[in-house]
Length: 428
Image 1: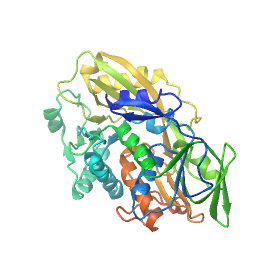
Image 2: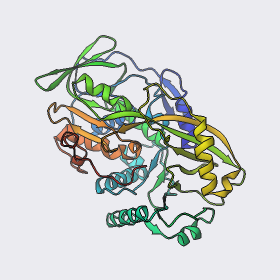
Image 3: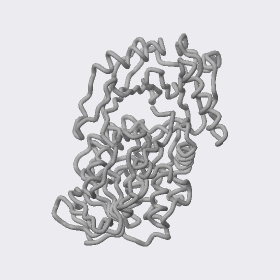
Image 4: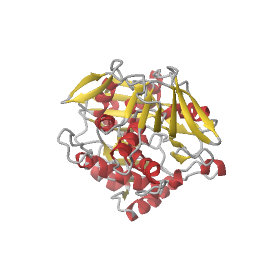
């Protein structure tokens, strides 16, 4: 089952949490009631980031505390995790983002090894068709060339390409307006994110992390310390640390602790289509200068884009806008790849980015004043590819008080206070 259709199925599961066993999903009931009255770490949100942090923390032999993961809806139907297209790239302009994605590729390729060779755990394939960034202006071409140098310095295989080189490898593109591109066929492409999420969640629980289907309605703060969380069911749970993994709802969680956070839900659209005249080779994840992207998805193709008008939306607004397909996406992909003039829409959906309005990059780590409140928020579409490294880093911070593998301090909350954005030029 391809990533897209697996995710489509996951979004329509019933109320119990679903665990994949032997290729099939089996229902597993999750209690709403915590077993204890106090936990060392309370993680608010149990989707990809909550489960990544919980898994890395629970498997760390140096962490001997208790973990509670509070997830409001264990069907995960409307989470960003359920709507992900599970892509990974090294084509960033900032060294921290590049190193994070390099570890993400290492994690995907060695997935079973990270579970200590557990023979229940499947291998994950990274489909390395790469990202193809197309530039139609000298300014954007220069940005791509600059990015390629940074990426190559860190060991990435990104190539800066002329139109002639692009045409030689991918003759189906219309390149009349294109003057350059960047492409990388190694450790860059897409993967089965749903399986990774399943095993993080399952293994975290096997290693002692407790999940409840409930909702945090209040966070107690005394003397700049989070001391408790109150659940919708009425229990007050004492805590040593609170970790905000609430995705697009992260600002609501922060407000409960009296904190602000520049994160809001933004709608992103995905379309699956069939082509009457399929391409004779895999289509890289192609980022058109218009902002529309497209790639191979099994025997079909996937396309996506933001809306031209991109406001914050309601947390429960997942309505599809079919005019975007008719008026924007289809004309652009048919122009870029003439063979896509005759295509048929198979499926579509809208999901939410946890969009960081400050600089469109993650906010990770403790609040500078309420230091036992930890942010894992605002990934702005980079979430799944960054979740292995970020989950590991946050677990290191909780256990040791510092990052040990990759320095995640550039993502700290203090930059928001100081109005010093994290600069990343390669944002889709």
